[in-house]
Length: 131
Image (cartoon, rainbow, N blue to C red):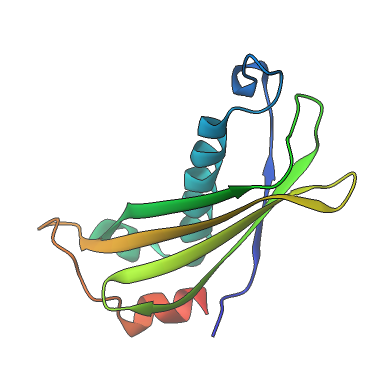
């Protein structure tokens, strides 16, 4: 079962542009992290944020089209039901002027217990927050 889709506007600035005059690959990674944090903050409460930490285990990015300084982008993200301490987050970045997906990302996140920094099984409270 997938969570509700969370939308996040993306602002491109000159620091995102590389020598080929399009958005640099590293900017996509930053946006994926920014989106994940914003999504977590929107569904969690202060107690959850103090008890749990999310860390990235793996990123997979398919770059489908280039984005440029004047591109208008929005990201859509969702998670699927977790497995143990692993959560799988999907992000699609759209060019809103053409309604085209320009990148598809799958990220594996690991939930840690904040005090111990050890992996922690994703419990019902977190699953319910996303689903």
